[in-house]
Length: 203
Image (cartoon, rainbow, N blue to C red; front, side, top):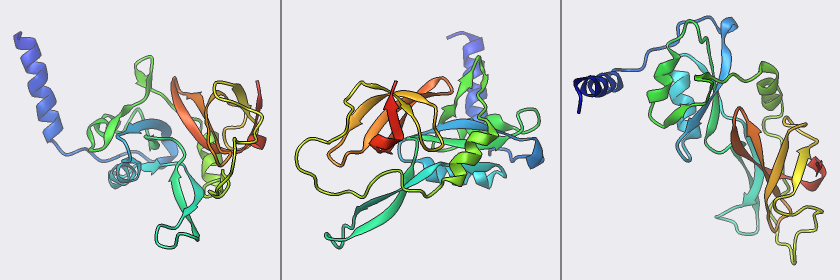
């Protein structure tokens, strides 16, 4: 191994051992950037980023599931709208945002052309405005195949909700008539789950 590579590894270890630096910018100058997390680490990572003085946001939707303690009852729970994705608000010119990359639970910052991708404030605002809305129906037993006019791999357009206008492909239609589609967001494909048939149309 060359001296240069050894030096790079030593520097990486040194940086990883240092505590992440806190945000220093004013909130008015910040932009939203997408951050990917490890599986089922969205909530814990959201808190770690918030603890550094940034605003962090995990879009969630409300879904009804069967109560594990009362099998005939249903309870409402919130789940991440995107698997393993959250948004952090940083000032790319002032804040040490690169330190977010090495927080526990973070897989990386989504980048485009080498720079952090940015998400329009309006999109995040719309997601936050709809936070807690039930994007799907309560789980229930159904007999036979789902009575929806779509099937796996169909190309569709979202017509309702914060992602209205997005195009995607259906990846699953479950027994409860919920539809999962794969949409392209900031150069990567992410699943949009628990849609109903009247929230999409053929493309």
